[in-house]
Image (cartoon, rainbow over all chains, first blue to last red):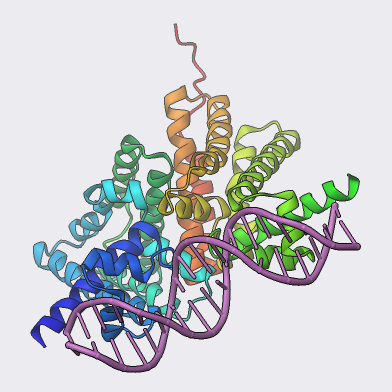
Length: 197
Length: 197
DNA sequence: GTCTATAAATCGATAGAC
DNA sequence: GTCTATCGATTTATAGAC
């Protein structure tokens, strides 16, 4: 069972990477099996259908995202600094993004075109970031509605930068946009200091 | 030959729409043939391979984009108003974008993952918008480098808004982001009035 | 130009031996 | 748990009649 759990985890890890680099539909069972080093037959012992692998990959990404947001929260108590950690993803994962785009954005877009039933689960990763960012803006003193709107603005920034970084592969562009959004964040009108009756 | 040209154009039109709605790889010859109302056999008289259809679709999109940019230029001589026409695409094509994302962004992203040789041609549509927007910013008085940076910023806006509109389907978000970018455009420091020696 | 029929390859998925 | 062998459906692509 220990070996089984390892194999299953290896399959999910390989599928996660291949779905990101090649797309969900373009990734065949053969490709995943080869990446893990097992036969196609053994494959079906762990996952009955391709949709089951997709569900496992999305679950894995949700868990990984939750863990990353917890790490960021532990890293600093300053909400603005936490938002900056998110903004910097496009730099941290710059090489991957230039080559394959944003893993969340490209998967949700593909599943939308495939009309795939697992699409809402893929969107849930976006929702995790959205809610976490909104929490940070709320902590900066924004009303809930404004905090959510700003969270979406930061998300839109990351998606736009990722899409164009992937299309043009220009690193300077990413740095400029990061600097621009950091100025926007610093100039963001918030922090109601006075008491509101 | 007249009938042939019509059939070919119908194939390109149907393939264009299906590539947008279902993705390039997920769209089969059968689906295109059914949409046009011809047999698969007849199909191969007009296009030998799937890549030939893709090339024809991209050529068609390039031509359509060029025509649209010309129409915009004819509509108003004001560069800021021209840029606004681009910004409003996310509203004009709002329903399609919420359902299928941006046709340019999703195709280039898919071709990147497929490592498809036609990817540079797909990116060329982005480049058309980029150069046209940069021309407008240059006409507003920005130096070439700054004009290109602002063009990329506007493109990134459209890609980010399209990705999140597709993921969440929220129309209010799109309107807010459009209003935000219009304010940015109005406040954009440009128009060197003084003479620079 | 358009059709039917079919080849050749690959896909997801199954059966059963070990 | 892992393997080989294979099925059935689908895909791109071809051949040849009309």
